[in-house]
Length: 135
Image (cartoon, rainbow, N blue to C red; front, side):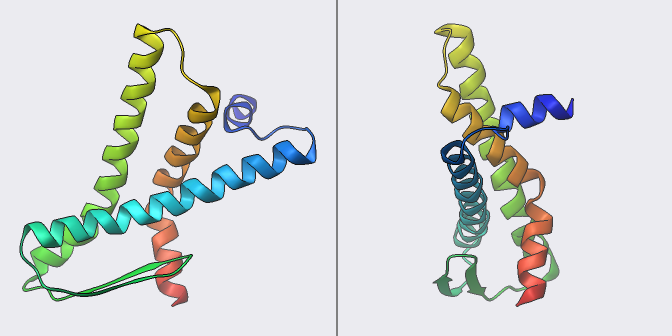
C-alpha cells in the first residue's frame, strides 16, 4: 500500500527534475490548502455579517482579524476552514471520477495535484495548529 501511495504522489527514485517538480507540486498544494482554509473562514464571516478588521497575506500564513459575538460563531468559523478544504477536495475527486468515466481520460499531472491536495487536506488541522503555535 505504501508503494502505491508513493507512486501516486510522484515520489519515486528518479532524476533531480522529477523530484523538484514533485516537491513544487506538494508545496503549491499545501499553500493552496492554506489559502482555501482562510477563504472559507472569510466567506463564512461575511455571510453572517461578522466584522472582518484586516487580512494580512504572507507566504506561510494568512492572518485574518475579525470580531465575533459568541462562542458558536467562533467555533463555526474555525470549522469552516476545514470544511471548505474537504468540500473542494470532494469536488476535485468527483471531477476526476466523472472525467475518467465519461471521457476515459484525466491528465496524470492533475491527478497528482489532487492527491497532494488531499494529503494536505488530511493534515489541514495540524498544519494550521503548527503555524498558529509557532506565531
